Length: 155
Image 1 (cartoon, rainbow, N blue to C red):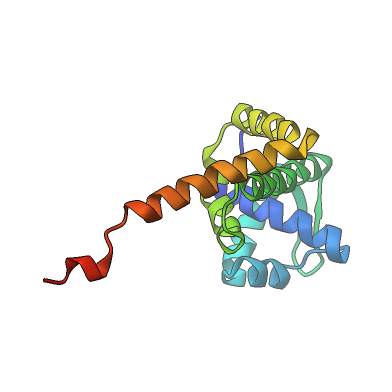
Image 2 (cartoon, rainbow, N blue to C red):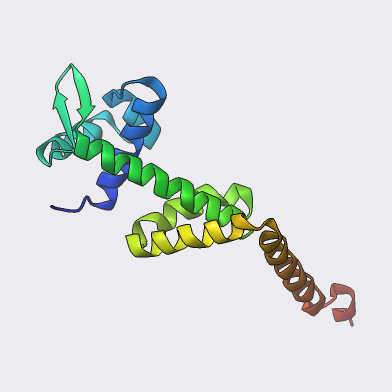
């Protein structure tokens, strides 16, 4: 079985989400969600059809195959797991989405599985998350105290 490219993964993830949310996914919806031209979506959808991830009929729409649904769900779950992981480790909320988009295609499924175990570990005992936050806060305070005082630099 050929592995989908990162771009194919983005499309499958988005198509899966649209179908879950609206019950269908049109080329125009996918284009809007991914901020690409409809012609780009049509080309990718045709590739995904050739690889049996979905069935596409021009002017009638598309349907994910069982293979496409399985991979789409897995990609959505991966994205959610990485968001949860970054939230647990204290990444700034407005940075999380961009960070997940930046790393999700570069991690092996083994790494994703291990991150899943780490998330479970932290969630099993909320004190662990609090301890991690305390470490982060202590480190940030230390970094701030190491910064030179601007008034002491004036001559």
